[in-house]
Length: 69
Image (cartoon, rainbow, N blue to C red; front, side):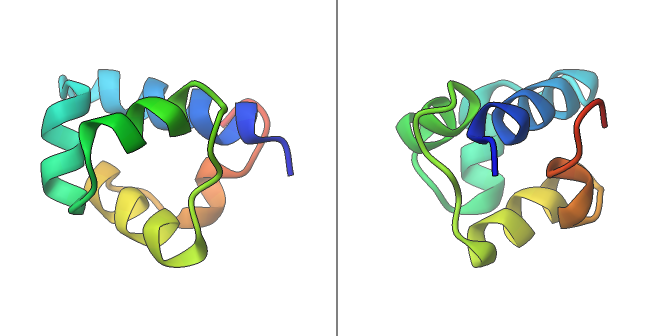
C-alpha cells in the first residue's frame, strides 16, 4: 500500500469539506500531528483509525485506498 495515496486522499477530502487538520483530528480522536503525518505519507493509519477517518470524511475506508479517488 502506498501511504502517499492514503495521505493525498485524506487531504483532498478534508479540504473539500472545509476542515483543517486540527478539526479532522478532533473528529477522529487523533492528534493534529498524527493527521499531518498521515497526509504527508509518513504514517499509514491502522484499520481502526482508517475507518474513523473515513467516517469523519463521509466516505468508505476503501475510497481512501484508491489511486485517484
